[in-house]
Image (spheres, rainbow, N blue to C red):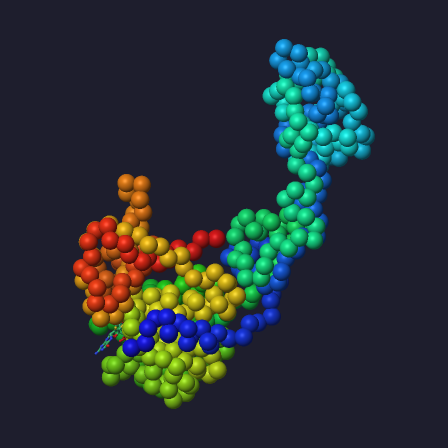
Length: 405
Ligand SMILES: Nc1nc2c(c(=O)[nH]1)N[C@H]1C(S)=C(S)[C@@H](COP(=O)(O)OP(=O)(O)OC[C@H]3O[C@@H](n4cnc5c(N)ncnc54)[C@H](O)[C@@H]3O)O[C@H]1N2
Ligand code: MOO
């Protein structure tokens, strides 16, 4: 059976060609991926300003100030943020100044208001010295005109969106979202919100996969489920051909009504079937109607784990995210873990902090149809075949499932 790594690299050889970047509002940019280099066209900050509420001064005037011998200066006025002053500061003078307000010409330091008193109207008295540059933010100290700021492939997080706004950009070029079609298969499927008949189950995969597509940066397109006939599946998958990537769930194993692989072989090209992993063994992948096609297994956990290991990497690679790989940690086992046979196991697990240490806590129930052990799961613990039993404290490989911005 093919290894996960080989399947991943074969699949990633079929990433569709990139689309033309789209320009979107900053308000819609969270989590999107920058599609062109972003440079700074002006100094940030654009002018030298105060980092404290206090008095703009010549540092030299206060060189000898102390508690015993405070230095008194004439206060020429007040400078608020947004109100630059053109009159230069003379020796012996101070301007009261607010945080973020432009320094008056000639001033080279700000003494914070707590280190001063007001002995008389129009005067201030400083009881401590300041050094040149103290409490002053220099023009361009954060970003300089002409400097490259963001590379293509950067994921836009709240701080980076703040940077774009500071650069004056209200729109940003990003990679368009791939459209990912979902076709669940199965006579037994009923949509949520409707009563179940005998032998029926709710179609949960379509919804879980739609959410997984959104989380991965794609745009989900939910088609109605296909009945378990070859014709129904072929025709529903043909409807999906305007998508960039096509997913199906179910019907990909060796049952009498598992038609997906056959449809792929007849209407497209099967690239691989069956991967050495649990859950998710019967994954099928190939090209259908000129699109990458994933036949995901029907068991709900198998569908999501194969999405995580194969579909998400394709979406992220397509989006040019250079850091698409999940963070993988080496963590000690919180409690003993069972022996593993045959395939590589991807074990739903929780991370716990105890005694100042992070531990991996695999859930006991790992059946591919048990959805409840996703609740609270942060990670998949990756366990090689024919190993174990494992003792508490043994170091395991753990793939984090969280993707923060
Ligand atoms: N003889 C063998 N039987 C099975 C094998 C095998 O190697 N030999 N593999 C097992 C493995 S592993 C998996 S995984 C499943 C995958 O089978 P299919 O992809 O063909 O999926 P179905 O049989 O259609 O469904 C499996 C299971 O999942 C439920 N299901 C299907 N679609 C949905 C949906 N949209 N939402 C919620 N649940 C869904 C379905 O009712 C079944 O219970 O095959 C094993 N069998
Ligand atoms: O691989 Mo299946 O996905 O074990 O249930």
